[in-house]
Image (tube, rainbow, N blue to C red):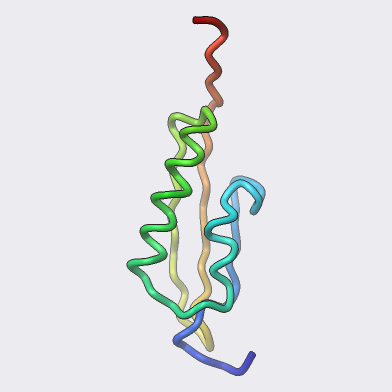
Length: 85
């Protein structure tokens, strides 16, 4: 892909496997839209919370370069499970 500051380059996920936040990982190569990235991060956070990570948080740092690289920091926290109802 040619150099374009209007596209997302690399998405680097730390703190959890990239598979934990696939919604963000698939942004590579798409047009850069910070509002969309924020929405996707919120949806990914809600998904982690639904999986039992009630304290999950995601922070995305945008690094403009030839393309816009995204550094995604995932903090899962403890996983809670309902043992019995």
